[in-house]
Image 1 (spheres, rainbow over the protein chains, first blue to last red):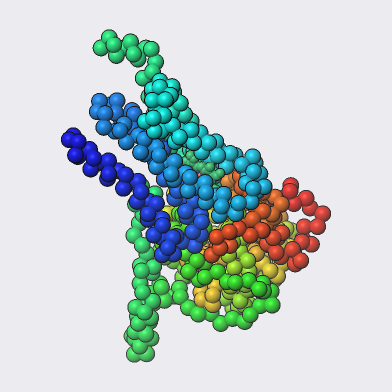
Image 2 (cartoon, chains in turn purple, orange):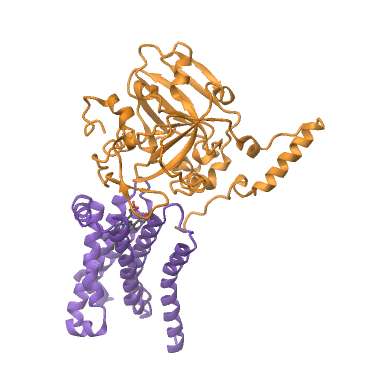
Length: 203
Length: 310
Ligand code: HEM
């Protein structure tokens, strides 16, 4: 792929990830968010958070399987977009859903496992977002940076558990995300196993 | 969610009102000429009701818009999304419709919906409607006290509970494919709850015949309980000596109690019931004990531990 095409692709993904937010804004201002706009917004931003988290962490396996470095170049952008959506998601919960009632929020975080898991997922994503710049990679050193960023598997899993715990009955989607995450993690672990490395070296 | 293409929208949902008003005018004209025309389903479904205003109505509440009352529904027989019932319930046939009334009664009977409509004068009853999911509405229902029907069939002394069974028609209800609830949908009340004047058999809302997505042609409304207690599209009412198994309680007994009285002090195990979002509002408001109907119904539960019998 030429440098120019790569730039175009980058821009397309950048705009593509922004579209859901833009669409929600449009619907907010045209009164098109349904009977319960707050719920619609919280759900849509939660959905995009987990979609982007899962998509982002599939890029590494994809790069290795395809033996093509292209997918992994989008990892940072997708990851940061996931963080962008979870920030809106959290802000809506804190400011609108709970009306900034600190007492109620603390109680919710401690008492409601789905909120606890969501919060843990968010807290895990914060250091990852902060250390996503080139400078931070250099500062941490690639090895430590990679180790730190493996936490995205934990964050995404907590996100899936959060989702699983909040649905009333239809757990199809949480299970789908769970299955994808388990497969991806299993694959990475298998890749990291000495046996696998020996087999590859032998082949 | 993009996966899973949805079936086509029912024609009743996309026919503009002006068009089928025209069609009705045509039908009336045809009838005047003595030409037999089969009445289309939509015409049988829509209609204005004559009603009086009930003294039982809740005062001082702003009504939730007709659009939200008919567009934001939980009716899992048509799918789990709140917009599914409005999109797919049009396929359900609500005429002819009969309701079997059986069990511990001296006069078991199968009633045609047209006869049920004549049991008692139709009233407008404005009630708060509180969903177990912590949102709420204010709905001007049309109907009459369930007790009017119960008195007609003369329950025996063995009748301690009433069970309501909803339609389960796999041809028109795609949600029945979901294994999460044990279909048909069933709900139940204790006899004294069923006899309480606030407990309403509903045939309409906003002065019009009930729309399919709201549980046409006949549903139950128990305003001091969470919304799911109000069985929709009822085909059977059975009087029982023992507490019946109910759909949500069977699916998850620790989360959905048989009583399910609105109670801000008893949280759902996974979320709080202390507050609710009134549809149309951005911020939550406190939830009222018995949904604000404590004065009328608290005596039904005197001496009962509402944390145990939630
Ligand atoms: C990585 C972190 C997170 C992910 C991936 C995530 C994902 C999701 C998803 C997928 C949904 C359901 C959307 C649907 O029903 O279609 C959701 C709903 C929700 N999330 Fe999160 N979430 C995260 C963090 C949080 C945090 C930190 C909070 C608040 C402390 C939170 C509060 C909520 C609430 C209140 C709902 C709506 C529940 C309802 O409507 O019943 N989430 N989230």
